[in-house]
Image (tube, rainbow, N blue to C red; front, side, top):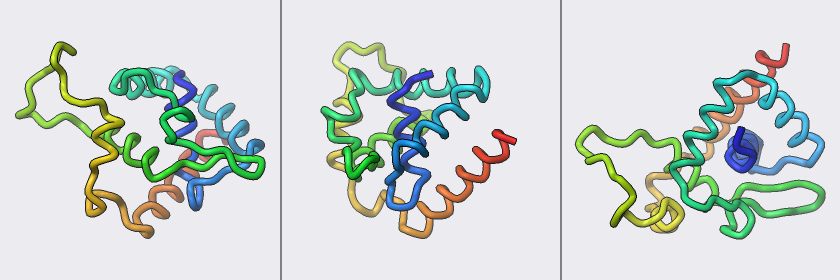
Length: 134
């Protein structure tokens, strides 16, 4: 399981992207024990971003006993989860496109989710996590 991708996924599921450490630890434990699928998924997502570092890249900020995902963090996560289009050629890394972090910084505001869409996704993610924990 990739810790940094898991942190991004957990934080994006909370209101305002903020979670206290106790909630983060609980959710991390749930996902860590949810099976091989989660571990494989986070490894695949992490492979799409070279040298992912959620703190030095300002994807997550530490606040008042918890962590909050930044807009840049949301954009990077969205790019990591985006499926490559079928018309895009496979890349071998040589002369590859700019990093996903650089792409996220240039994302137009219109590609971001609305507040209602984010709340619906967070609610659904929390319900899935609770269902798996049961």
